[in-house]
Image (tube, rainbow, N blue to C red; front, side, top):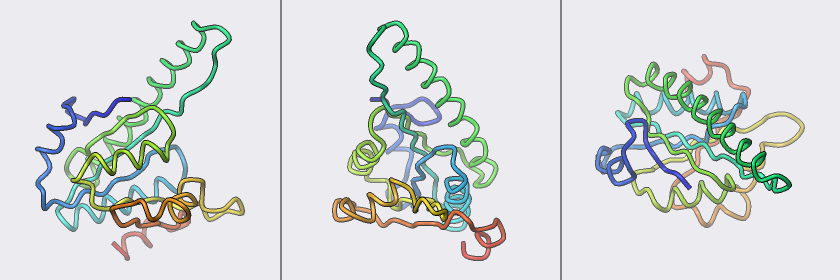
Length: 173
């Protein structure tokens, strides 16, 4: 399990770099359209409220144990892809907010790692998620956090519909 921010410091340094009164909006990063909408919303809110954006990406573990070398190679490739994704997203955040985000890259189950991060990081004040508006429902994380797990959260959750346009987001943030 790895937790680091963009500057390569540890968890304590990330917390120290964030003022206690500063609003930190956490976005769970993946490659979905609804995440992009949630990210724009979080960036706009952070910019207007003099806050920061934090990004969490969880590398889901694979249980490929047939050939250990293949499993290790798959894990390294997944890590490399995750790092590239986070660099791309961090650049977008920097352009929209004017400050680099706090970055958390972890391995495990997305919902478990999200809950663990929220408990470990008192600076996180709002969780911003994008909801899929298609026939498949809002997505597994939104469903879990608005269902069984809602009572375990210590921060409010903002769910942004994934079909909002940039203009819609700008109007409400």
